[in-house]
Length: 166
Ligand code: GDP
Ligand code: MG
Image 1 (cartoon, helix red, strand yellow):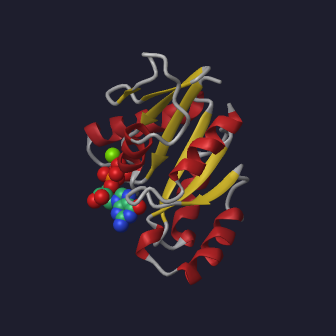
Image 2 (image 1 turned 135 degrees about the horizontal axis):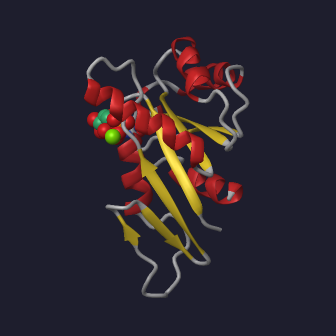
């Protein structure tokens, strides 16, 4: 079970926080082999029998400067060749405002996409179901999973889902 996973989404939704959490904590079984380490710089997550490369991408937004356009292009090209896509959104944001961008970014994409609804520590649980259902209408996501990258809540499930798709 090896492969490439891109973490994409708008700026500040928590992509880098999630990557750090995945790489920085023992959230999947580690083997006693010396190579079973986490390489922060390359985002490589070694597990028994496999290696998952998590790719942190620059935030996708309507860029004006050439540098920003270039960075957005990098994120948009990553979704074309990776094996699994983690599409992160800020759970507190209005799903209706994300619809256009999700459809645009994922148009023509063949890899399975997991929608990760982040920052659930910031809003009441009673708002959750409505948002999960709203995102389900936007795109045929493989899964929609609520997490808090900051507290680590749900992060283990994200890794397990990725494993199941590789
Ligand atoms: P990126 O631009 O998508 O890589 O976002 P970052 O990982 O840099 O996070 C942007 C900000 O959101 C930082 O201040 C994080 O500490 C904060 N953040 C990320 N995840 C969470 C979360 O689950 N809960 C809360 N409350 N804050 C978060
Ligand atoms: Mg980042």
